[in-house]
Image 1: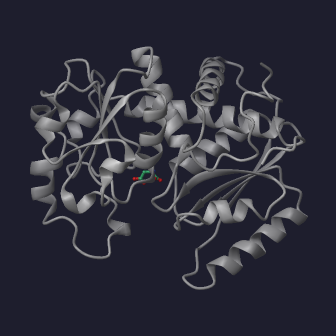
Image 2: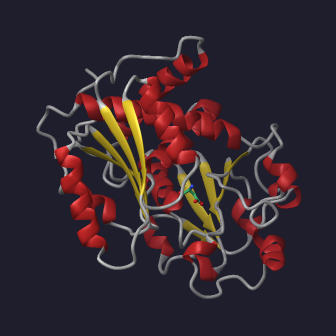
Image 3: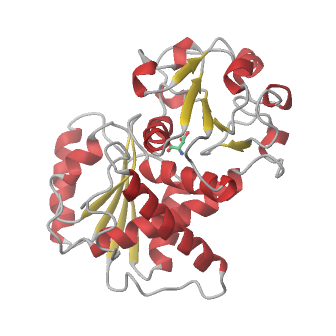
Amino acid sequence: MTRETIFPHRHLLGIQGLAPTEISALLDLSDDYVDKNRSADRKMTTLRGKTVINLFFENSTRTRTSFELAGKRLGADVINMQVSASSVAKGETLIDTAMTLNAMHVDVLVVRHPDSGAVKLLSDKVNCAVINGGDGSHEHPTQALLDALTIRRRKGHLDGLTVAICGDVLHSRVARSNIHLLNTMGAQVRVVAPRTLLPSQAERLGVEVFHDMRRGLADVDIVMMLRVQHERMLGSFIPSIREYFHFFGLDYEKLAAAKPDALIMHPGPMNRGVEIDSDLADDVERSVIREQVEMGVAVRMACLEVLTANLQKDFR
Ligand code: ASP
């Protein structure tokens, strides 16, 4: 298969709806980029002459930097635009932005927005390829891809693994994208969370639901912790940080329920001492959190490559 056809889409807006072969192809290409990124000569020309804009309506350090590095390593011109999302007239702002960007002949737009669905809305108005860098609590596809790459490189496969996604599932786009990806690739997914931090009818996402960490972590291969997203909480979702850590924070004692070689993951940024014990987060024997960051650059290079290769095609 040529690289233009491994991912027959104009945009990457989410994981939901992608075929297993498309996900595997992106991961295979990402694997090549991990090797290239570890070599001395990391500067490539694949995207020479192309323009990538990081359009972020919400704060981000790691995702934005990761996309910036990915674009620059491939030889693209990368521009960062940090925009504050006004509370009113968001639709209008987005469409204005789209018209401006169309006039500038941008090739790829990486968009992060606090509202679910906003990135799709923008993608309908622009002439370039769009990558969703996280929209509200909806999807964060490159995070799920980098998580899958981390797992696949460590465990050799995704199918048949049991993965526990723990914590603030309600507000997490990372959880949603991971649930779609892991289900598509044949893994078993559990969510472990207090009732207040779960979407209603969470089972409909194709997961097994637990409210107790020790039960939820029993014999799992992967423990994926989520950040408690205080900024998306309008009311009180957890009684206190101390109590949350006591029941749902990952520590060595709760981890003992998982398989002895279970990997610990976290998308970052971490609230140390809230959802994860600080020493455990840094324990290189168990935690692959830093590796996730490394995989992120490779995955984003793969996504930029396939989408720019598709630009002349008539994909929707
Ligand atoms: N960085 C991830 C995101 O943007 C996870 C988080 O913020 O908790 O969704």
